[in-house]
Length: 76
Image (cartoon, rainbow, N blue to C red; front, side, top):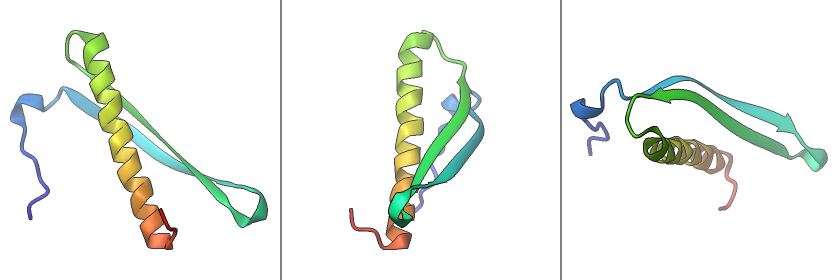
């Protein structure tokens, strides 16, 4: 299966500038992982497309965090 999506009509319209995931120690040997992504989009109307851009970034974060859970053997 090819996971690459070619969407030339969207190139340059949603640009991820930087991302990071932070690990914070919690009591009882637990860890909190938080993710943040700085991005910009060049689509109008801004209010409408910001909603979709936020959802896309959120979905990407969930996918990364779910993968981390799987690798660590944490049940969902």
